[in-house]
Image (cartoon, rainbow, N blue to C red):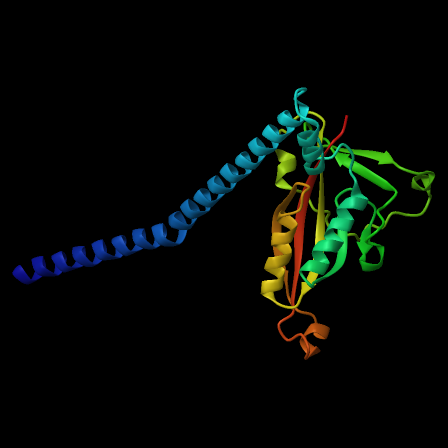
Length: 241
């Protein structure tokens, strides 16, 4: 009789231990990762809200009628009245030289095609804006060539979209999002490139950085054994009256 009671007690202990292990596994592999993901997203939202608040403050200051001429010029340099893509591309060329890196392509959101290395001083004739209130695309034709009957390529990669486009921005504040594909000598030069971009006078937000796997040519290049390739998504702003 005592042996039967002992066996039952042992069985209960084993079942209890299994239940405990099962609950622990559920928490560790399911609940805990979800909590960490939620916390990470909350942090991202807070950072984004802080950036939007900063932009709103800059914009309100820019609109103030009693702003001095010097301050007005400085604010206009940060958030210009026009897209000023030529100045933007020139700034990226300067960053390229300072960081001793190579910008391979620049792909604008809602702009025609990709600007390659030989065309950094030019930008497409047809462009479009993202309405910051509705998130809808508004297309503007810059020249008569936009009426061309050439077929539109359907194989283009998905255009870059910034998370800022989902946030309500001040009226007339428009954004331009674009991808910059770069190749640097090493990781340190990539960090320098990003720092130089963030230090530009015009407001440029680094949305995300995607490290690219080295291609066959980079692997065979003995002079650049630590070459680093990455795609950087950037967002800049301008005031559209």
